[in-house]
Length: 439
Ligand code: GLC
Image (cartoon, rainbow, N blue to C red):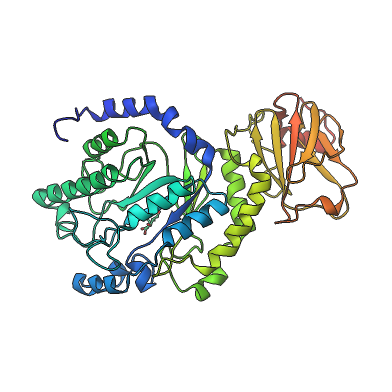
């Protein structure tokens, strides 16, 4: 390998990856929704995936968790089937979390799931399960490793640092060499080196990209790479691709007792609210589940994801595919987001109004979109809605409660305009409201 990769400077590496980014990211930019899976020895403990560190476990004690790590046959297919049913398009598995236990047949790391626990290559099963459901394959990989003796000393001992970074590169080389085409490499856990220099990320990522030329890499090796990763908040990034990663419960990525977690779990409508922001601001949602020790899906995730998938099967046009941002015409931004009955997304000249509520008094009025509306249709049923249009308002009169979305009560109205409508913000609406003449 050494001899075949011609290493270049950081600037040259970044300009080369920028050139191929649009092509590599094309599928990802249309996918919008993926499943994150946190699975490892921490799933056996069931006290959050940081327990080894937070509770200061001696390594030899923690290693004994391998005895209880017994994923049932077919668990990866269970995850993949649920992801598919939920309308997700890709999956990212913790192939090795900070605890240092590899879920694959590693020659570099003997502390793995083939030598211990199930004596199976879980990564191989995962890859196969994703492919069987037509889902793209993502590998989460931790930089930090609590099981590796050099991880602490690497902060001050350059020989230890070299051994650690060589080790991480060797692990990732295995992952990206032995399982066919891999779509995403998802770095995490930058302690203790905390810089791209520290982790040799420029060299490491060049070597890894040489193995998988189409791969997409996130921004957590301290290089910007292909996309940003806001965590536990849906925070759009106006300047680059972004993917919000979210726990299912606001508390833990790894499995914690389902009965206790149930009250904290998100429901389908809450996930939909997250997705609506992703649709409007062209980002992705990577929603996590933490399987139980035996690999089964936590109970509280099954119903919301299944219901959500039914909704997306009817309404996915408002979410998936090449979305467009709104062109703002006033400095105060988009009128009609937050504190409104609807969220919006756009594809060319079609605007999707995600109606969270369906007023029982039978009328929806959408203001601020100026342009000729040709047709309005309910996405789920395809039914055309009669409307009247004024310069600043679109009015849907005499709505029928029967037309409200039967799955989640969130009805999407697709507004097909002649051309992208001018979208005016509150700064322009306010004078109209107060009876002033604008300008
Ligand atoms: C944080 C946590 C880690 C988790 C990750 C997912 O970095 O430390 O446990 O895997 O978030 O984004």
